[in-house]
Length: 280
Image 1 (cartoon, rainbow, N blue to C red):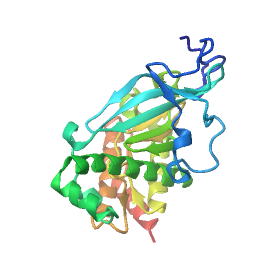
Image 2: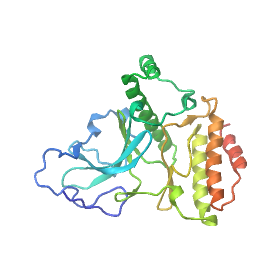
Image 3: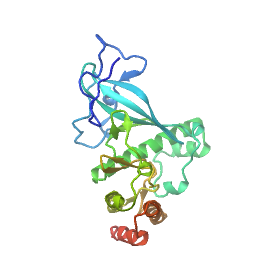
């Protein structure tokens, strides 16, 4: 199987699959899961032009992008055999029995599971409860990405949610993911534009009534000069969560401290005050 990719970050060019008469998925493939999802499990409309939604498409797993404490991210190519396709990131949450990370209950303040049976199962840490918890975080992140996308905040487009797997736009070039802000080598005044974009992200969240809740230079990607925020399952409702402003302050302190250490002067308390003013 040969893959022909262009420099476009989300498309493959030419023939995605050069295998004659390929009628069934191979070992590293599956039929596209898009047709099996309901409208509520799909990303905001209008769906981007680059997204392949045809039932005849295959999802081909190309490898792993990142392993984490609670989820792993895989690279997926979705394409109809013989046609151009798109590159997606598949974030697959592990259940709590196979995860070495457990989020603070503070993130959950102000939001509860609608199904009381599921909530009790999570509390008992049963096998069903562990599976529900993994799906709960995946659904939280999908919903957060949808809200952020609709609010104009630069996030990967949320393609769809299916159980514990979240499919989203892959941010990068070819098969190479965009670097995290923490991986960049820029210093001092060169960071001015990047910091302005981070402030815009914080402002966008505040105006929408949310805080990222875990913002740092490690979940901000820099792609072609543009900052994109990722990892949103813990997003905090500033009105409903009693610790909402504390999370917002921590987000501000984290990013301002990082920029200050790189030689760019920041004023975290002034920025926090400006963000709080967006809430009223």
